[in-house]
Length: 146
View 1 (cartoon, rainbow, N blue to C red):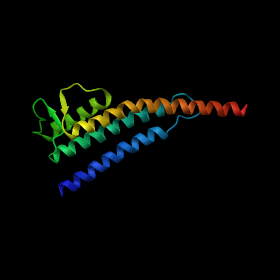
View 2: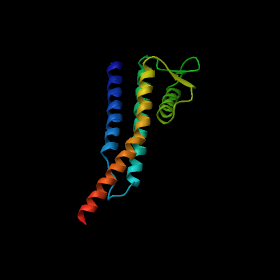
View 3: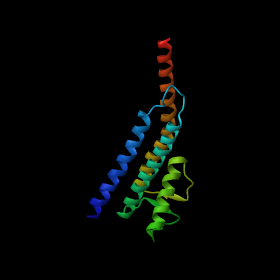
View 4: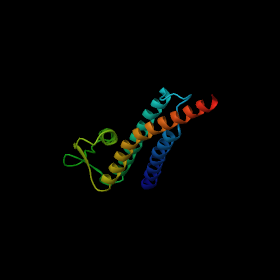
């Protein structure tokens, strides 16, 4: 029963991550502006969703007994609060930087961390590309109207 519950949580987290990235790529700023406040807030929301989604993925796999993270000698799992703190910290550090080395992924956790780091590097590029492409298209539409 636990495996089914955590499988549903993992699938939901992965769908949330994928949906957030698709939302960012499809969303365009309004009215020909190069950047919009809504677009920036949406980028922050996508980062938060991806960070939480991967954190839930790490935590679920740790609770299922799959060793993913190591802090010092082992991940400290004496309390759920400490585990939540560790996985969210690791998720944020992996998404936003290259990592500090205080919590180290192991086994399949390395591959999950690689995917998360790749997403972290691609999100700003997707943000800039969608903004520039939309700005160029709106500029062409305005030129056609004149």
